[in-house]
Length: 233
Image 1 (tube, rainbow, N blue to C red):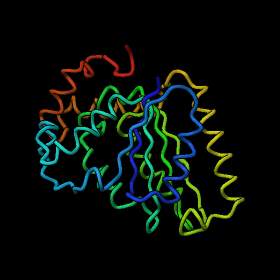
Image 2 (spheres, rainbow, N blue to C red; image 1 turned 90 degrees about the horizontal axis):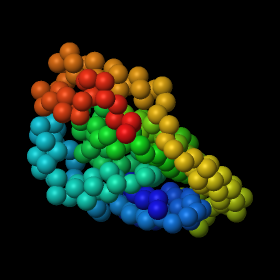
Image 3 (cartoon, rainbow, N blue to C red; image 1 turned 30 degrees about the vertical axis):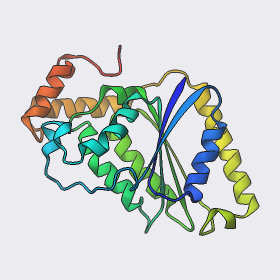
Image 4 (tube, rainbow, N blue to C red; image 1 turned 180 degrees about the horizontal axis):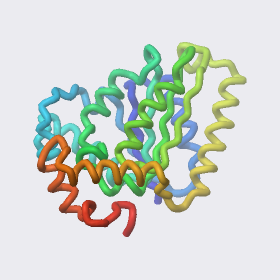
């Protein structure tokens, strides 16, 4: 069974939510879907206290973050959605990414992330959806997720009901194609970019250039500084 976690960068079910919903319906086979809405399910901003670098549980908002954290670790596919606001991801999506910055390869990445796929969906009434989705995707790539697909589209409307029929048909066609593409892929492939990033950040930890000594201890505990690769069994 495919386990899917969706992180919505908005509370309302607008154009971006509708695009993601079409995509979810097109994914065939048995699946379990968990959805989280920002800021409803995580209404905090990172305070920059860096307590999480010593332990994730030290974050003052850990109790709210933990259900999302655990769901993402267990998922096979992550879907992050965000409307485009001022040529950028939404503020709730940015806040979400800030609160999980410890997941970056530069800090304490989860080995589970190297075995996942992710899709980032963004819409805009005008321009900027592509840029917003790529900014979110950049974070996920730095989490160690090797396959991140972005989809950004201008809907030429301020809400879903106002979308022209031709635009809805294009979206339906695109989502069908994307769902089919993902269903054909059985094993996640860790590419050159992820391998290089892992090597670079590993070298940084070896040189004691991390943000905290606990980061090097984390990498050493995983065996990553001695040849172990998180994407291998």
